[in-house]
Amino acid sequence: MAYMRLGDLLLSSGVISHEQLERALELQKESKERLGDVLVQSGIITEQQLIEALKIQLGVEFVDLTAVSIPVELAKYVPRTLAKKYCVVPVKLVRDTLYLAMSDPLDFIAQEEVKAASRKRVIPMIATHRATEQAISRLYGSEGTARVIEEMKREAGSAGLDIVPAQLAKDSDSSEGAPTIRFVNSLIERAFAERASDIHLEPQKGEMVVRMRIDGLLRRVLTVPAELQSTVISRLKIMGGMDIAERKVPQDGHAMLRVKGSEIDLRISSMPTVYGEKIVLRLLNKTSQLLSRDAIGLEGDDLESYQTLLRNTGGVILLVGPTGSGKSTTMCVMLRDLAREEVNIVTLEDPVEYYIPGVSQCQINEKTGMTFAGGLRAILRQDPDIISVGEIRDGETASIAMRAAITGHLVLSTLHTNDAPSAVDRLRDIGVEPWLISGALRGVVSQRLVRRICPHCKRAYHPASDELALLGLDDAPDLVFYKGEGCPDCHHTGYTGRRAVFEILMIDAPLRRLITAGASADELADEARRHGFTTMRERCRDLVLRGETTAEEAARTISSTIES
Image (cartoon, rainbow, N blue to C red; front, side, top):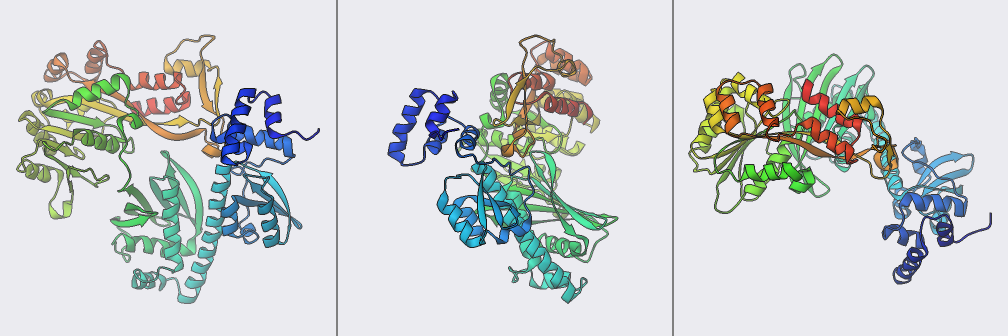
């Protein structure tokens, strides 16, 4: 095949039109960038389409960097600085030939510099820019991790494993270069970079497995040799102000860190297991921007109900759902929308996850007697207009909150129930009188988080009968569902990011009468549906039909409302 210019190749294959090519060429004259980059940056083609064209034009092999395992030892042939400068990463070494993944295989200067540094013959391979950056991070992070682990082994061998924790305690403030400290720091930095909410360090037979929770699901990232387990755990316990000598009793601690300019509140929990202490770290970004109503998924009828609830000057608004369903984030969005100069807002939180301007935020500390119930009594003496209680855990807290609401305060709180109507049953179970519930409760917001389909590998298909049955739909020839096939951008999961899905129960006069009469959650739901109440199942079905999430993800969410 004769060589074709990139523009002609894209034109002949029908990817772009003559008008788009002319526009891109004009932009290229101004920017002086390569035509391919101009086409991608202007949104005329995707990066994947550019790669497909370059494969044909240059005869360069494409490599999916998320699907290959790059040997750690290859890092020595291409210095980290060189890899980052040119966005290149070594993939494999065959005799004296180094295969080099590049986002720009036309960058001959990069090839020559790698050739000089490695003293190897270089064969370019093409990869997406994002995948190459991620591979660089993994390779050089792994190379760094591997080196640190070897240093930790040498340190343990020379000092003795029983001495290392004490040494860590002694040097915790001064030994920033100590291998164990650097290892823990790099682990936290990686979790922050990958938007992980939690880090799990799980002792097993012969090793300690490290997993991170990303987009709600745990992902294995690395293993630590069993002989280094105690040093890593000791370092984390020191950071959290915990007792390193106590290994048979669960402990809690926390630390404040600064990672890449962001302030991180690190919550640390230890639990003894048969192979040693398991550590779970919860990362709370204190300086992150609060999400907007649109960003968390409030739209349409849900947004109208949300705005109606916030117009109340008294009463109780409850947010319900399991742990990790986004209740705290939604609460913060509510408080931000309510915050005004003329109102006094006071919160009780455990822990304080976001800092909200104009709001007085109080931290629960049960050791000093600062409980939700005790703190709520104190708040009522602070002339509040709006009160936020992080969680209603017992009947005492619930009763105080309800009584505060009927005396003219707006109270926001969370409760662990599986759906909105069940919140009433839960309040009765913990001892709140039905008349008090009906008088105080204004609305219940139930929510879950669903994963979004990756936009880069999103594909349409005709759903199977079992998928339709699950969502309560009838088959139709033109009915289309969507799913992600898996690509480098989503780490082959088919999903990128999450959004909230809601069911909002507005407490009106008919529901108040039923609550006072002791009606069940099912009876409340039936009455609410007669007046337009939309269930979580229906909301999930709408998201599937709109192509925002998959039938599989919707099924997982629906089942959680039944089983949780």
